[in-house]
Image (cartoon, rainbow, N blue to C red; front, side):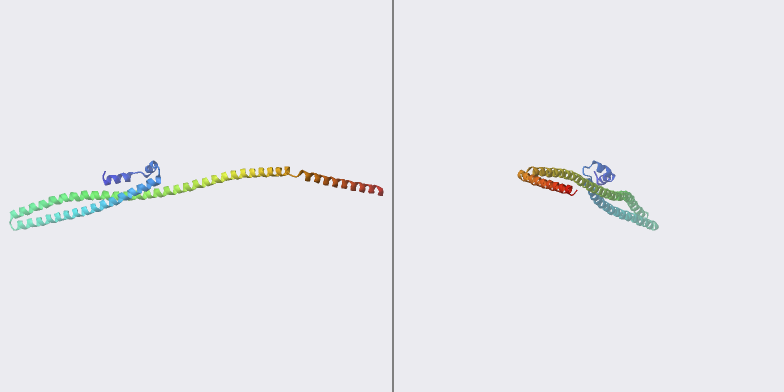
Length: 222
């Protein structure tokens, strides 16, 4: 496949199709842009060579045209001098240069068409490169945004899990505190409790005696 055919295939390639078939769209676009730039350099080099070739053909064509004019002038001079044989030779040389000029003219036109095609291909390829770069940048931006959103969702999910874990931990802590209080209650010294009860009993008896004394004194006053 020639350079132009390969470049035409690249130019005709649809960026969306490339992305849909690629496992890694960003890498596929980067490779596509790299291939386009590489071929763009080659196309520009080919265009430079084509321009140089056209300039050479054009110069040769103009030389042949000038030779046609020169031999026409010489043929006319020979006729004016009455030398028909010399005039025939001059006209023969003129026709030779005319045929060469016609052939060169066809080559110049063909080379010009080829050069026009190269220029159009360069423009198309440059346009496609810009489109591919823009598409690549859009894709990367979307990918980065999606990646950031995914990370945020993961963090939020972790936060939700952490809330659940903290809630469970709080419940376990409350249960542990309740058990500790129960163990403390069970571990109290029974002897101390008995003395406390005795002390409370003495207080009650003292309070009862005082109450009775107060009531008796009150009845005596009546």
